[in-house]
Length: 113
Image 1 (cartoon, rainbow, N blue to C red):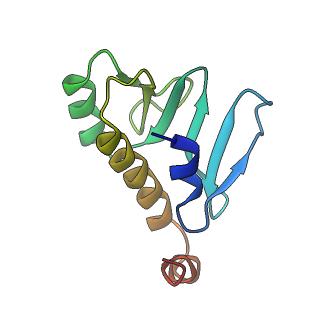
Image 2 (cartoon, rainbow, N blue to C red):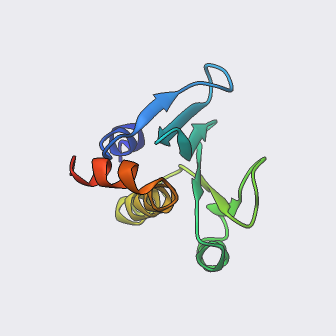
């Protein structure tokens, strides 16, 4: 799966490098929804689901690396998680961030779908 293409294909998604050239950050509305580097991607996640995913995928999914471990998971991009699952997790992370944006911004993004 082309993770970068998937992230940038989401409405309003932007790429940034605030932590240096090795770490790609994906934002929507100025807020992070994905951080990628060193063969891993960190995604925002509902706290209850985060625990379930860590239990289901113990080798690939761990608490967010250098992030709020309750709200973020870090996924190793080694092919062990099926592409469809990973895409759904990226979409969920994006949706959580979009839901936290002001209504006008959410409406603007919805009109771009």
